Amino acid sequence: MTREDSNSNNTVASDPVALVAKLARAGRIAQRALARMTDEARADALRRAARQVQNHSDAILAANARDIAAAEDRGLSAAMIDRLRLDEDRLGAIADAVDAVAALPGPLGQIIDKSRRPNGLQLARIRIPIGLIGIIYESRPNVTADAAALCLRSGNAAILRGGSEAVHSNRAIHAVMAAGLAEAGVPADAVQLMPTQDRAAVGAMLRANGADGAGRIDMIVPRGGKGLVARVQADARVPVLAHLDGICHTYIHAAADPAMARDVTLNAKLRRTGICGAMETLLIDATYPDAAAVLAGLANANCELRGDARARAIDSRVRPVLPEDWDTEYLDAVLSVAVVDGMEDALAHIAAHSSGHTDAIVTSDDRAAEIFLAEVDSAIVMHNASSQFADGGEFGLGAEIGIATGRLHARGPVALEGLTTYKWQVRGSGQTRP
Image: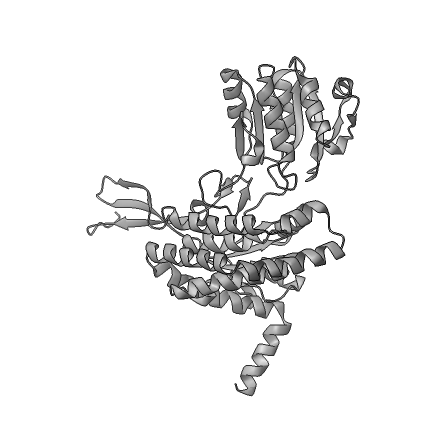
């Protein structure tokens, strides 16, 4: 190594902007090679990566144990530690998700639509990769595998920046997956893990729009708490695909089946309280006859209930609700409860307080269900199902890189199709424009 090379590397190590620019340049070169690979080659690479995760589970779990111990020493919440924790079952699910992405039809080259103009020009819109995607995430080590798999399968390169609380787990998962990808001839820089936990590197990623030598990242996907997502959305100079809150509602309609209502609400709230699809507000129709059983079931399962005056009149364990509770993503065994006067009241409450993530109705009245499905303006709207199904794997997408609640590009669970854009291909026979 020359003195000039040594000085250059030292500059990159100490300068987050230079570091991100270096990673971005390498990622863009790798992405072009990745996009030229056949679809089957990309799928085979993921199958090899999944086998590496399975074959090196001991190393990954040992790394995760270090992260769990550090999290407990730092006093992180039980919900945060649950998101962080891996075991044999969860690690098996991570490998299965990578395999599932490999088994899906590849999106690249798909013809979205085509037409022929009166002058003979033939037009087609074709799916292509977005390019280089930056994923900034907290807590959940499975995101390392999910993001790598989805980006690679859709022909995109990725720069992954996980949270410090999962640093050992992320490095272990990335290392074993990289070994599997290398076996299949995938360029090493196609999936890069940020080598530093310096927060300044996150800022450099958010500004990596190609200006002033910043390198270029085509899209940022944040996955984490409200603070992280808000910062990304506020500071990014590149497009962002994200959701800020998961304030999900379940409305028990007057015609709900009592057993179904109890089962769905318990699952929606308490199956896993720390995920973005967990119910945070329960709306109960004033004429629903079995409200007491629903609230008793939740309270008996150690869920703290905060409700309006009518909810408190149903069960004395319901505490008074505060105005800010309606707009709070608890991510814990805490639930806001309101009694509403029919469909219009429920729709108005959801319109005022939903974050546009997932909202559900429980009812045996198909007409009421269709009104709810049509009028609730959320990325995911459900009938007679737990909001915890708001998940790319459950939607048959293999995995997801996140849930998008915006209106542009992609909405709901973002998987392979959401990680593509398109280009127009125009075929002529010598036409000139008059």
